[in-house]
Length: 192
Image 1 (cartoon, rainbow, N blue to C red):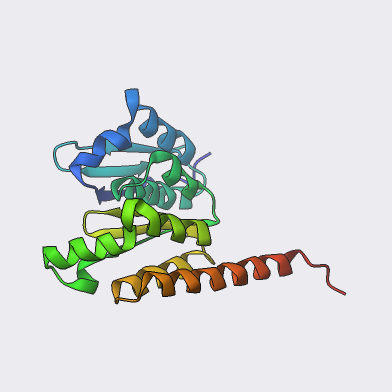
Image 2: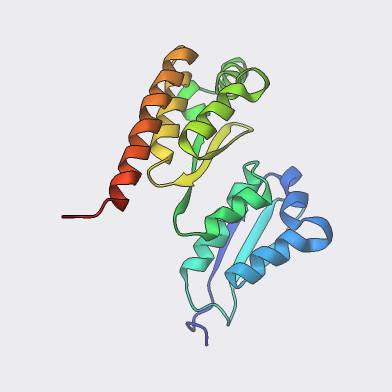
């Protein structure tokens, strides 16, 4: 039994990401529809995706989860990584680099290079230290992670954007990683 009122959301993703959203033989689209109990109507010419609830949807938050999954795929994540957002522990954060570095293409390319690093080294270090997934796509940086991981990754990225040395950011990540582990261990300690 559904919750009654049919609802829909409209999102736009880059046209070149539509194929990834649909997947081979419609497999990704079907997986999202089944998991979130929604119907996706995709316009491959404009990149508009309508996400509509179905009568089977009992939890209205599934509509928002579907929206975040579609947005994540649109921002460059693989469907496998985007589907992590089905789990309530995972969040999506997207920020527009143009709001931080202006609209200069040269600045945008430079900042994206600093975040990704040579052969992806910097992005990989941030991901490994924090446990998040990062996608640098177009003029955005997107992060999928747990609520306590995302702020650390965001801080590292913001420091790189503002010109901090990579080695300084790596040291900060090492300290924060240690703090995150310590906090998580505290959750498992028995109380006296």
